[in-house]
Length: 360
Ligand SMILES: C[S@@+](CC[C@H](N)C(=O)[O-])C[C@H]1O[C@@H](n2cnc3c(N)ncnc32)[C@H](O)[C@@H]1O
Image: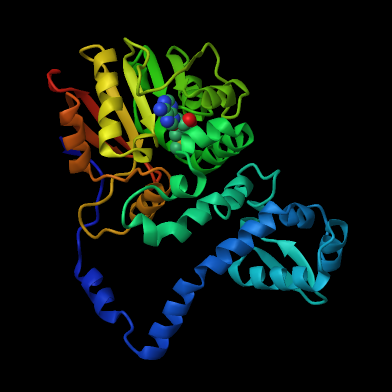
């Protein structure tokens, strides 16, 4: 197995900065208050986005009164929300209580080409509620299921509007990764690709735009396929849409099977069932590409350790280290071939082949 991720070696500077970490009680208290109140910031941003207040400012309403009145909100309270948001770079306040969106704040509008409005809204909705269940989740179980009585994907299927909202969030969150994946890997080596749990279809759309000779199949649960058919992730010329459950079977005989941010939604036993199905469906020389970010096995910083807790609460899934992928693949009759970095910090290309395939 080749892990080609580039990791900065530990330097004496790392040690020096650890030594320089403040220890005086005033600084420690301030830092702790910042950590403990970070929920306030998240919720203020979520409300600003969800209620369309960012859209209102974008549309020219630049005072609390102009924003509050058409929405039946209390002017003084809207003013206080905007004033707080000006401290974290979402809006600016000029003399006379006039507000404007910053480039960062524009991401909370509906029309921004890189809009994160749905994500801001969802991450302060049921994606926030699950964190209130962390105490209980440490004893076992899945917080989302405790709160909603069903696993996430079954609940999304039963609530189609939520299913569509979830797919919009996936487009928003994973958009910046997509060009980085396409740039980091030569997909021209494949004639046929199945994107397993491809959802909205953005990844397949980008691969087909870059490699028009590749034929693609979008495989997902019905609501994922519906989103892709609506064009939620971009055009999908010539794509075959296949609605199904990866725990039952996947389309057979493709050259490559992609799994972007699907394995991290499931525990090891479930991943094993999925990968074993793919192993049965694939040809001797097919490739499996898992597009996730491995958790470092050392103390290198990165967002994976937090996303790991989030998926634990949301679906019972987990983020994995490269050795953990290697073990999982081996149990499914696959071999971890290499881990390729991409230019995006949240995704690598974890490539596996059949365990008995020739070395490549
Ligand atoms: C976290 S989303 C990732 C979507 C997309 N691959 C991306 O990178 O944005 C997981 C996707 O897997 C699909 N999925 C979950 N369980 C599945 C199953 N049992 N069979 C097929 N697809 C499934 C979901 O519908 C969803 O589209």
